[in-house]
Length: 261
Ligand SMILES: Cc1cc2nc3c(=O)[nH]c(=O)nc-3n(C[C@H](O)[C@H](O)[C@H](O)COP(=O)(O)OP(=O)(O)OC[C@H]3O[C@@H](n4cnc5c(N)ncnc54)[C@H](O)[C@@H]3O)c2cc1C
Image (cartoon, rainbow, N blue to C red; front, side, top):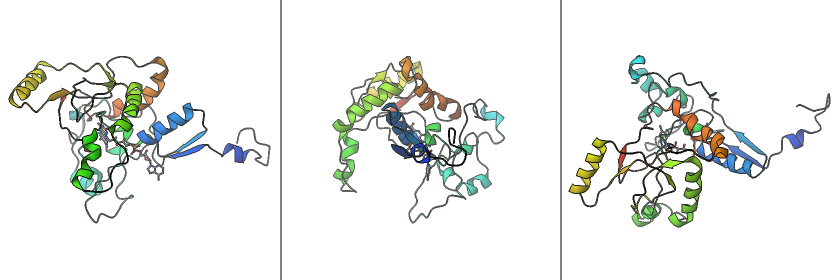
């Protein structure tokens, strides 16, 4: 390694000793690495996936009609990618970011859709940016249903962390005051277009218990702090070109939109 003596690496132990080793550079691992590095720790971040070099987005600026199958998969592709192709987003334009099912099989006693990126950054290169807070409805749901193990936390425990992350990445959304999708530290929401406004008006007029709200997404509607910008590029902006299909276009989301992924 640089700085070693000719034959013996006397510094190898120091060079290869880390305060923290993180396996996986997706949103979880990536964020952990950011936090630990910012606190001054020496961090090793490992990922098994291919490194997508910035700019290497072969399909990012193509229109649907430029793809041989208009974004659809062939029968062979579906057969070969028998798990990943179950997901709506596995299509002609971004299939190259997903794991190879043939090389990474697993046993399914019961159907289990394990949708995996195989790239440095993981699914942060694929996600659709929808950012909804869980509420106690979610944290208590399985307990009420008598299913699985009770969550050891409730909304109040995690709320400050939602604040922390939202303030950093920038989430646009409206403060709608709906208990099951708690409000966050939002940037200004996108404005609904006239059709959306009309739709909202009609739904809310007809159903007193239903709300149509602007989607809450990691799309900036005002600048983030200058110091955070570089990280923001890694976490959010760099994702844009790869996510042709992933609705960064704001749209009103029905109130009880479920977090299905
Ligand atoms: C198309 C799509 C749209 C989505 N949209 C949304 C959305 O709008 N809103 C939302 O909240 N969520 C969304 N999600 C889900 C969200 O992207 C994931 O929940 C989140 O990215 C998971 O982060 P993670 O760090 O846990 O895992 P991942 O991002 O999957 O990261 C795991 C990392 O670990 C690496 N890895 C795995 N095994 C090993 C190993 N053995 N050694 C080394 N590295 C390894 C992988 O290569 C990968 O980089 C979406 C997901 C997809 C696929």
